[in-house]
Image 1 (spheres, rainbow, N blue to C red):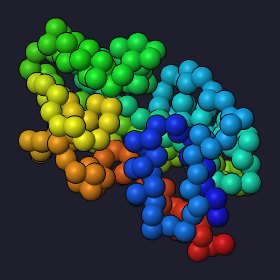
Image 2 (image 1 turned 180 degrees about the horizontal axis):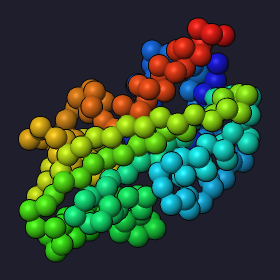
Image 3 (image 1 turned 90 degrees about the horizontal axis):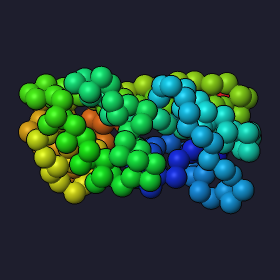
Image 4 (image 1 turned 90 degrees about the vertical axis):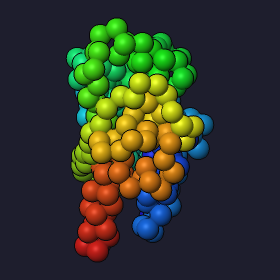
Length: 200
């Protein structure tokens, strides 16, 4: 059975493929579709954006499962920012290093010692029948004083998972996948797909 992922982010795609290896699904990315246009992510929440992306891809692949994710970093001392703007916090075409630099600067200006934060992930899965399902995952932690590590992607080098003295950027892929917000949401999706396959 085919499963199409509504993402062009290679880091996310690799995480999905590694975590979904146990299931007998043929996994594809939206980048394989030359005629597909990414819809504007103008929702006011991770859930809304995940739904926008999943519906757009499902409209061109209605015979397959389509899965999207919208996720980001929520910093308590910044009033929930960067939130749904995580990928473009430092500008529409910002590189991860630029987003991290802005975040660390804003933490210094506004947060002081209050560095609590969490990663949040919403997955939206649409079945060939058109049924829509949501799965969530949250990873609690805090923002490090400076970027550390070259692993992962996005804000991984500045995020310290709760109970760890290493950032996600300093962890191996296996270590990160065992605890990440995306893996927590994906595990729920995988369990659902396993049950669905058994029912079929």
